[in-house]
Image 1: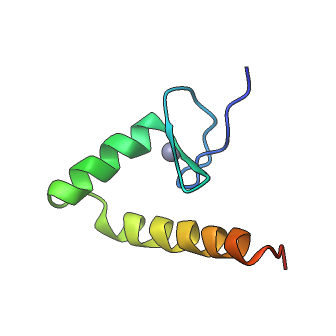
Image 2: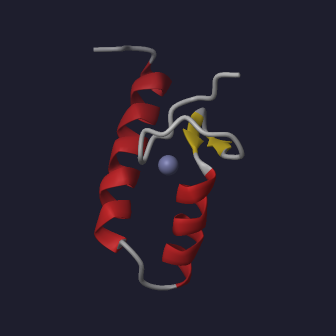
Length: 65
Ligand SMILES: [Zn+2]
């Protein structure tokens, strides 16, 4: 079975979740939870969230360009 590509790390693994149409794998979900409680890989998540919102904005605008 195929799984969507994680918007953060690019992995296609089971057990993740979808947020606003974007897929987040279970490993990244755990990291995100840890990040929200404190400290881990903060800069990585800033970059990931930026890509996430860019992709989401593209979809909301209905344009691939
Ligand atoms: Zn991931």
